[in-house]
Image 1 (cartoon, rainbow over the protein chains, first blue to last red):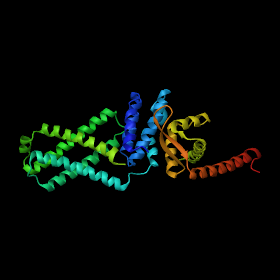
Image 2: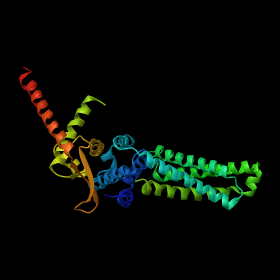
Image 3: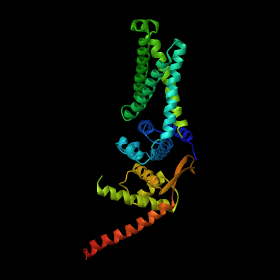
Image 4: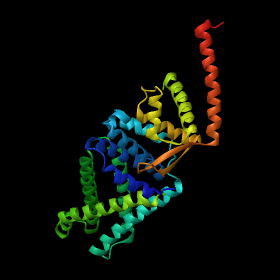
Length: 215
Length: 109
């Protein structure tokens, strides 16, 4: 029996064999299905199976649209209609680890910037960050069939970075009570770079969680 | 969904069960077999939602195995419940066929 992670790896490797058009079509489907409420193992199995079909069809000169139709979102909804949802316990473990991840990121900023930081504020801040991760998941699901994959990634990164920077600025504003002090003490560009780094770390860990821990 | 599509789906499921009951197949192979039997109008991708439904119902099971030409593929086989469903399908299909033929040839007498 193949594990979710192995299935995911096979899919990643074989996606490289797709033509540009087919890859674009397939990536939209995979982003939509992975962010749906489907058991990760089943979603990876489905994705590998339809990828295998697409690759064989591609050899005969067919496009993804010929195989799956002109309405990929509708097709994906049909595909996931009969799959089992994400089990509650695993969901709980997954989201708790996501919250812990948020908390670690916040603690990291606290330790590097001002160790006297209030613990309660940390908790609140990490909760907002956790909501942010959920928002990004929802957002990726919503925009799966809009624009090209690169544009989608760029939009998501921009929104995430600005969101994180706003979050940090707001909390520092609360602590220092004056926005001028915040801007003076912590230049905005440092915030942006830091938010971006945190976001990338978050997304990488999040992907690991999605494929590795949710079995 | 219209009744016609529902009926076609039911018939298609019966056909898929019958194909898989003969020997294990993977998705692409199945779609080729359906096409070769005359189901040209059915788009290739539409078998996957059906396969997924049939798996959920417990008629078929799929396992990933190495294929002769290399990559791992999901091969389907029919379960005990699936064989029973196939028998029921065959019976209802034969009845339906006889009834429709009776009407078409003898005008329903």
